[in-house]
Image (tube, rainbow, N blue to C red; front, side, top):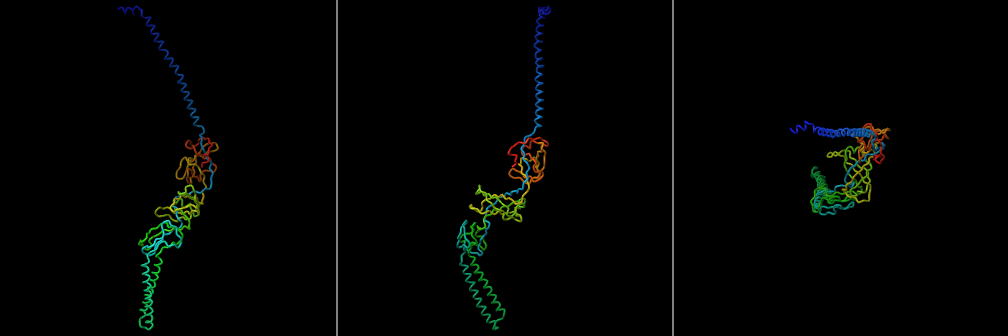
Length: 382
């Protein structure tokens, strides 16, 4: 009842009113702060709009690129190949008759002179055959002489005398064969050279025409034999120049020329064999050295060189490139590619001489892009 009387009497009303005023005062600053914060938000939006405008402006500015000018020239497309070094002339040597080897005079790798005896077969059997053949021949001569005398006296018929003549001819042929066999008991070097291979041993029984030696002919010089594809063979002719690098002498370049060109492909590899003759040299050369050939055909093509980075797209020998006009605007052009080597492409037609081509930076361009040409050694495109 006392509390009710206090409120009823109005003694606390001033206090309550004061509290309500304070609450209202404290509530008003956040509203003001919210209104104040509107300004930074608007400022941020304005800045973002400006940045977008600047970005758009930047995207329309010129793109820095490197370029090269098309300059056509007469060039030979080099043919690359690898082969083994060998003497120009080589041949296999063998006995023409059978027998046992009794003397072997040379070793593999040995130099020999023309007429030098390389190996011999035993002569005992051959001498016996020769003696027998000579005796039979002499006997047939005596028989014929006797029968001719009887025939003239008409003691024997004509056919008996003719049989004696035939027997003498056979005996003479056997004697010649025995003499020839005796000549073939030795293998003699047909020319100066080196024994590249020896395939028989002393006291070995050999058959007729069994290979005994391989002899090189050092008088004809050195060659490198290799095989190339049909696309390369059509560009190569005899006497085309070649640069040769041997693994044994990596810092030296040897000169040579194409000496032989196959007229047909090998049936097993479908490749064409060529032979390159080396020019005389003082260097010590050995059979089997590996040689790397750079053959320069006499025939030439009219081409222009560009870096491989110039290519925007390629398909079946056609490439797309960006050319630059006088207004520094790029245009996509198509050209025919002749070949590619060492990080470069050879353009043979499709673009006019003197045209500027983007060599670096093409990935950032599209048709109609504006460019700014940078000055650099890369402009040469070589």
